[in-house]
Length: 276
Image (cartoon, rainbow, N blue to C red; front, side, top):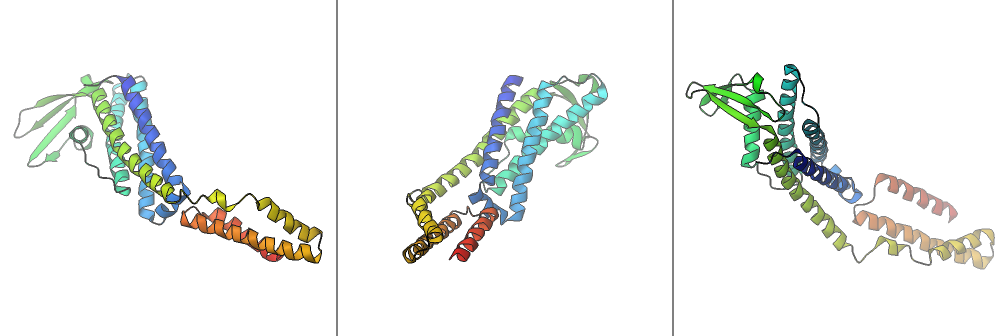
């Protein structure tokens, strides 16, 4: 069993990096526009990412902070870490669901859920299939590394189950990293395909090297208003208008046209109409 806090901390670092990768994808304009069209999915993604980040913080502090000296706080710490693990599992499952990535709870994660349910969700009366269990945490056993869970039922004699908290955290963290990696890889592939689709049509090419020349001739038509300068400047203004229209179309095709850019382009169009 893995029970080295340093190893857990390294896994948590990688989980945080994967969380950041998913956030970067969702906050990129071309993807965010589509996601925002499905409000329920968008809210599920945001909530799941926040809970993943929050539970990583709680787990990190649990393994790195001193364990309380008083029994009351020991229970609070134990209740809290088990609930954090449970919430983290749900958050990753719902994030995978939002991006249509297959997700199956492993036996290790199911074991964590079972321990949490027995120890802190329904310890005084827990229905498990046709059996009813009654459990409690042995107070004298409470420690940062785990505790002993006493479980009894009408069908079975009392059981004393030793819970190795560090091993549980390590095993869950490894599984969570694997699940988030699957989500991250799918999103990276979607981004790669999007880039490939427009790889030969760069937006930068719309603003060609003669752009400054166009503005120069428009300026001459304004400040040196001979017939030739006015007519030539007007034709160059037409080229500038087309360039901005092509820019807007390219952004729309790539799903990159956000409200701020749309507003700016509207202002430019109005200015060019007045100048025309």
